[in-house]
Image (cartoon, rainbow, N blue to C red; front, side):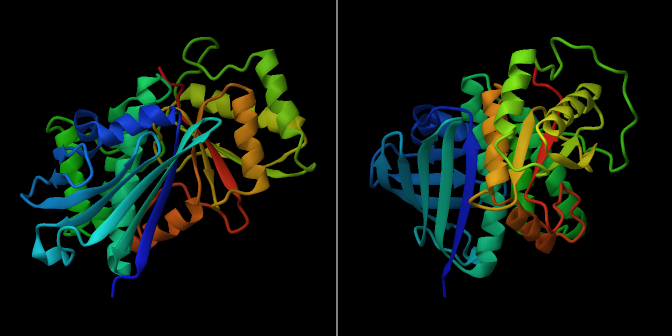
Length: 336
């Protein structure tokens, strides 16, 4: 019986109208979904073709410009037990101060299907968010997104070499990169790199922006905990994390962790909130970063995501949260 619903949310630094173009325009749709054919009106077909010869097949059910796209979804392969047009995907766009909140809900799935589709839709929404944000030059390159997804898939395939969903995503990434798969980051900690100077290519905070950051952080009770990780491959990321840590300390927060991330990171600043909706402290950090004009990719429900990934792959080595941890602020190298 199909009872489960997948819900994936993602924030993107782009206006809803920009994001919607990547949902409704067939050429832009292919930029994040791969080899696909998309109709432009209700009742027209949608097809996504996979490298193994199979396809996802659906029909457009609802279009609300700049706000919503709904389509049915299923597969040509009978082995997937989800025939064409037998499940439903709704993608909603809501304006937020930092850009757009994307909410995808996929209904009509069994529990096992829901687990597999959750991973797949997170991958595709990451590609959508990166493509839309790149229009306004507020995100790292699309290649960085695919490299991060590939590193995660490698861990899963190491434990489950024949996992069909992971293999399909691997082929999708390879196609998006023109047939060349990105290298896999080494599991060992990278060697230190020379210290970076301020200015271009650094996370240097001006006095005004630092003051704005501290003032906004001061809205939380004294001793509120903060967790900060940085990409150990990059000295600028480490220096940026230290600057942020000093600002949090001055604002009265308690640093629980200021350490190297356990995995390689793509460029940028990331705030992963444990819960959805996020805690008051997470929301304060989000507001403080925006007040300091620091553009961050924000994800909510991260604890549930980690639990799903660990169920799928006990050997998964991504960023994880302590039981009492409400969020983590992760600092990659500064975007070019």
